[in-house]
Amino acid sequence: LADHVELAEFFRKTYGPTGVFNAKPFEGSRSWAGARPELRAIAYDSSGVAAHMGLLRRFIKVDGVDLLVAELGLYGVRPNLEGLGIAHSIHVMFPTLQELQVPFAFGTVRPELRKHIARFGRHGMVTILSEIRVRSTLPHARIDLPPTRVEDPLVIVLPVGRSMSDWPTGTMIDRNGPEL
Image 1 (cartoon, one colour):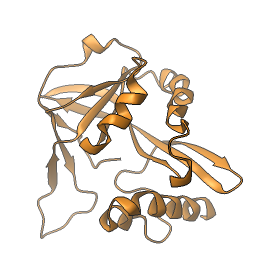
Image 2 (cartoon, helix red, strand yellow):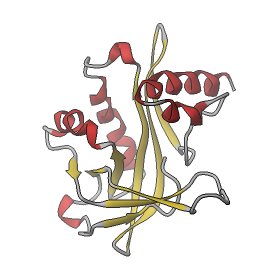
Image 3 (cartoon, rainbow, N blue to C red):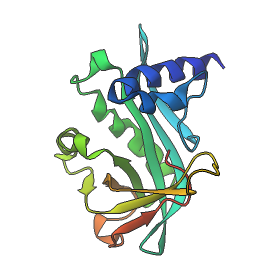
């Protein structure tokens, strides 16, 4: 429980500056916003949690084609450490992704993060796809809202067990569940 409380505080402080709504899912001791991650990579320093990345294996549909991926999400770096290259710590997750035998890692980010992701991907590790809509199930069933949400984020793809040329073409991804 103490770990979840510390992570929830980390996410509130990390996501809060981007909007109060973004910090809301982490009230109390909840350390995930939508789907609960299967694995987490957590970096610590003397001040506590320094960075976090969550991972969840799932099948998505790209224009109706089923595809196993490791969805990456719940990414965050403590604000005082931004710009120090901690984002490149995703490289330490690559052997784990290979062990999971997934063909691709997949994630989504706000379009405002394009430059940040592009800097990270300049070494050819990730591909940024735009103009792709992503449908997700809401994390909680509500009678006043539709059960799904469709967004236009940037889609990030990291080839793990297959080449990027094997990624299906399409303009709609169905997450088959809530965002990580």
